[in-house]
Image (tube, rainbow, N blue to C red):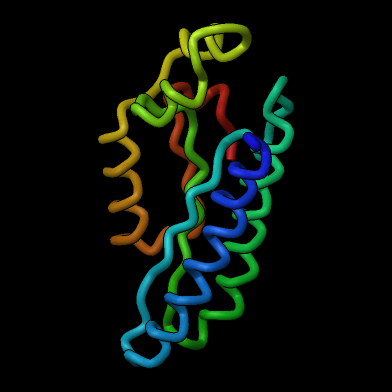
Length: 140
């Protein structure tokens, strides 16, 4: 059930959201901007994260392809590669035992830092942004 939920959220949810948003954005004639939330793990080998990393790699590839497809419509795309973020969701996802307990002790950046990065990316029309608490470990 965990893998299915992850794939439905990170792949199906993104596809369905984009399929709904793009026609409305085109119809408005004003363009717009779509932000894809990917992860720094798309460029890393990480234990217990293969399916998650693959789902985020899907998001990154979709963002890059749609950037080319939607450019003529004035719709911008930002691909955000986000590192470990402190959030209630993250705490529940990792749990309190096994690998999750060890991973939960690793440093995380505040959710506010991610939000500021997303706003800055949209305002500057950045194509790809890496947000990570330790940039030397997180290369985009």
